[in-house]
Amino acid sequence: RADRTDDDVVHLFTPSLCHPSLHAITPFIHSSIMTDYMLIFQVALVVNVLITFRSSALWTKYFGRPVAAADDASSSSSSIELKQRHAKLLRKYLLVYLLATLSDWFQGPYVYALYDAYGFSQHDIAVLFVAGFGSSMVFGSFIGGMADWGGRRRFVVLFSIIYAASCLTKHFNDYWILMIGRLLGGIATSLLFSVFEAWLIRSHSDAGLPKQFLNISFAWAAYGNSIIAIIAGLVANKAANISDMVGMMSGSASASAEGDEGETTTTSSTLHVGGYLNPFDLALLALVACGLAAATMWEENYGTSDGGSSGGVASNSDGNKSDDEMPPAAAKKEGSAWYAGLKDAFVATMRSRDILLCGIIASLFEGSMYIFVFMWTPALKALIDENDDLPFGLIFSTFMVSCMAGSSLFSFLIKGAKGELLGVGVFLVSSISMAIVCSSNNSTLMFVMMLVFEVMVGMYWPIMGTMKGAIVPEDKRAAIYNLYRIPLNFVVLFSLLTDLTPTQSFLLNAIMLGIATLLQLILMKRRSLNGETEKSSLSSTTETKPLMEDQGVV
Image (tube, rainbow, N blue to C red; front, side, top):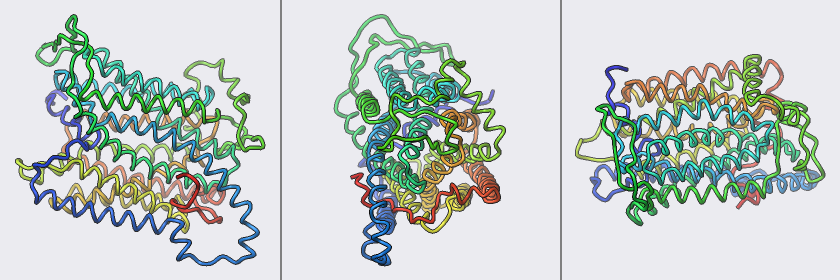
């Protein structure tokens, strides 16, 4: 917009917004502010513990209904075998996946701070951030779409290499090197949110696991990601303060892109270490470990058309597909054009209303999450004295505890309700919470409603993960998942490049989530009429194992 200033754009990229920053915990916050948020954090923590206990095996052991001895004997051997098989798969997945998310959380709070420390103008920094989202939308979609025939494990390793290269570029105070890093980071983000999930769903099918085990896997992943986020923030905060950032290589001046007044930022040193770069070095180490773990522990799998939505590929005696077995569909596509995967995914999405509805719903909800991350800080700061500050670290921790509670709540509720119906409830409650946030002038009520939304986020990931696993065809899974991210990135770019106030942004969230609720109702009705709910519902007549049940994961 012509009337928009660089300050309007760049406020969206402060550390507390890109990833709510744990390093913002400071001793000078007024006690009245801290006490209020501390009390809410303590309540949220207690609620999380209670919900997690209710969904755990401990509750079943001490308070569950006793099982008849005959029924227990008839099902014990098969149940134990399935649980052992699932525990083995889940350990492998969580190790790699949580290392990947650990690397992402390490970087989040320090991207803007690093660019600012290098002396770039606010306009230059805004362009860098927008370039990252644009790269995820364009390049990431095409590259991620190749994973179905190129091999999901291979592309997880590729993710590690690309994201590691992005981390390395942060050491250079050169605008165009940093721009390359942002482009690489956008591609890596698309792979992170598509290829890992595609590998997991196919591996469940190859291992011959019932669909209800997929609920457990996604619940564990969401729960673990929240814990990793808190740990990463604390560790990164400590690492960033160990040493100051210093230049190591002197030479010709490095220039940034021109700002609004044609000014150029120069520096006498290009290569830097220490300070804000330490979290990126930690991320680099996590990515190396992630790539090595995937290469050595994961079996390769591909997208094939012989098993329907959930794969269904014949497996060997161990329940796993041999690394050397390449499905015919994958071999055929090796000679296809580089864009063939995304093209086929687009055609499949347009021809299937269920796939299309699922993608729109996912984009609406995840788009609202990005807007929430951008806008919660200015919304809360508008309700406090200008001389006060928010306890960002405590707020972030409360958000993550709420997400964990949502994951545990899903694990409990899925035992008695269908996943599609739970999705309707999640979107409806999210819409109502955002409507209250945008209309409230009470900081406590606003924050509590934000926590309600975070609980719904914790429930959303396992619900949507398993729902996509049932709807999206296996041979185009990674490509379609990346296709889903195109409208999502449009939503993100729209929120960044328009001059919406926090109130307007949360109102937009409420509207988008309301639409998602209606579309979820339509999708649930369609699948019920087609008889697919019973076949591939998130719930099952077989009792779903609770989140914290002893699966041998920890």
